[in-house]
Length: 587
Ligand code: DGT
Ligand code: CA
Ligand code: CA
Ligand code: ZN
Image (cartoon, rainbow, N blue to C red):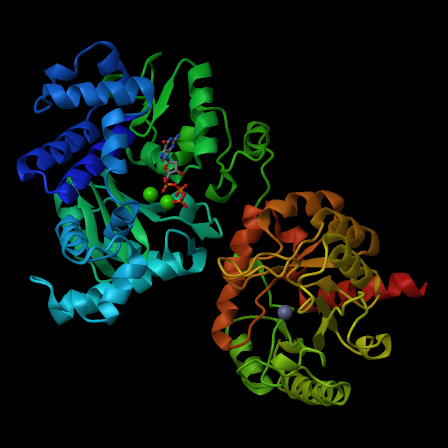
């Protein structure tokens, strides 16, 4: 158990004691020791094994014993008992923004509340407001806090976290005491779901930066505030951590706090193999844990750090210990897709089905955005809940798009709408439109929108059958998952990828924040099989064009390059590519 983990348990003990109504002097002692531990410059294991805890100021004998037990056995009897002596729900209540130990204790003792549900009920009945020291306003705040907690818990969509993190990063960047700053953790690695948001700053004046950070707009409450780090709750209930380091430490801390843990482990091993030690403070010429500046191997940037370990720079998205070390050693990392290389999305909706905007509006907007093309793939007739198009309506739409494109051509504008459909894959794998109609369309996306409860074998067969249709260009949102909302349907994705490889069918990477489907973990396999990716917005309104960036980030995480992604091509070569599968079948 490392010092941070020990510190965290000490903090929790302090909180539990406070909940029990222990005297404040005792509870504060735990918090103080936790602080001291966090700022230690040497590993706690060594201090304990050399029996030197007593030399550290402010750690009394009782707490020394507890730390020793934690470090040597990984658990602490006293803590376990303390935890067991209180209802578990009280700790959960503490995670509601605005509720501290004092309030939770009062709610428990006076109203017998031991969990979120009971708390919510009591709020609804006005019982909380009636308590001494609470009142209407507090009750209202608690209600909102419960909602936050429910909705967001500790897993959040990447897009939500990015939306909150980017303005904060901008604010940090502008502060005169900030030398360098970055996001870190899973957000920087572009994981589709993040637990919390991590910020890293280098500064000569950490106190100023911490003060500034904790008062930024968008910060709901402060969970912890120390000399060099702070934890806060952002709007929407997302937790965020800030660490402030010296500028010399910055590249090392950035690599460390970007993770992943698995990636970090290998980095540290590589350092050891070279007679070095790597930690969050630096890379040191030493064969034992240290942060002695005299031993530091200076690196200005992460690039230098990687190079010291005989590695090419590994982009954050690839730091999952999924083969990046082998590739980086051989200088064989792919040049990852840039989102600006995308020339348009091939799966989008208009107000002809369930989208918001008209064809005309879409053409204008996407052209101004700098796209070269944009496919209109409204739903097919069986998706009646999404206002799917009957064949006659689709034919009408083709005419409208043709005349729109004619106007663009007349005005010598380098942009075209492409015609298309997102055709439903029906239960047995038949398509919702017949081949004769599909043949008339520039782009055909085939997706499943119903029958989610079929067996894996059935669903897999459905998708393979759709891929076998010569008029289907790509499969849309392969698993139907809605992140944090709906599980993917059961499907053998590898088998479907194999079928796509055989039939020359592309697979979509749906950039919608809830989908990001097909998952980044499978693209490596698809790429090996030669299956191309299409990064799509599945746009239902203008703003969704931004999903190109999210989708591209996921494509990067899946190791994809420009040539792996179909919609990086110019309109002319895209048209040829769209003809290819159909041509194969005819000859
Ligand atoms: P999350 O927040 O659950 O989505 O995932 P991360 O990866 O952002 O994890 P987080 O926020 O707990 O920590 C950020 C990074 O710090 C993590 O990716 C690696 C590093 N880190 C944190 N704790 C440890 C640890 O105990 N050991 C190692 N090797 N690295 C750690
Ligand atoms: Ca994190
Ligand atoms: Ca964190
Ligand atoms: Zn769809």
